[in-house]
Length: 246
Ligand code: SF4
Image 1 (tube, rainbow, N blue to C red):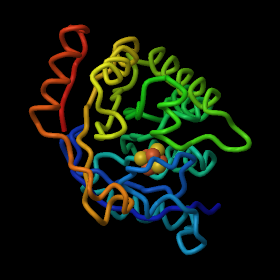
Image 2 (spheres, protein in one colour):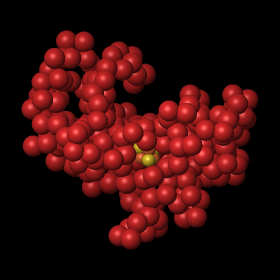
Image 3 (tube, rainbow, N blue to C red):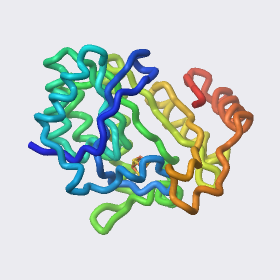
Image 4 (cartoon, helix red, strand yellow):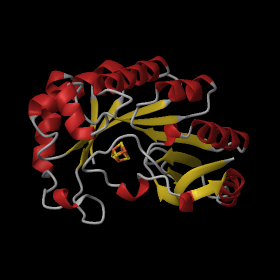
């Protein structure tokens, strides 16, 4: 079997405190204008890899790799490949993490049901307000409406809540001036995260030219004070919410 995999890189992540291997699946069903992996959004033939080669690379890194994290792009779009690699990691007793935009609840449920993941980071990119969600994710197509995508993410969140005692769950939201920055909008996301009882990481938009589209280069990242203010406001309203700023 082959998969569109754009890169495989060892990284340091907080989840394990040790080196992990990140496997970057190419392709995404969202087109967030501030995406910091724009080079991973297309499934080009040149990034097609045989899973046996990917497995070899996992094994080669096995001595210093505590975990593998599947990320993207959106890894859940290549379900059979993702499941096969997660099973392989399980056989090798390597922990498995996944970073997802939450739009494929059936894939998430399958992984959780088979106990194939230890860590799930889910993006909550916007409140569930159709107009704002669409502006932030540019995700609707002829085949799927914004409302359906929102319902799918809600389903993913319910599934994660169901498995919260079995896996480590982190929700992530990027604060992007001009898109998601108003206190009332961020508070709505806080409410969503509070409902699933997950750790919440508020991330700072990064405007590095190689990471974003041209029209976002001139948008400055929010200041630490601005993020701290948001954290404080959300923390006041939802005192049990565990919030981190990155
Ligand atoms: S969901 Fe993630 S990978 Fe996909 S476009 Fe948005 S930021 Fe980029």
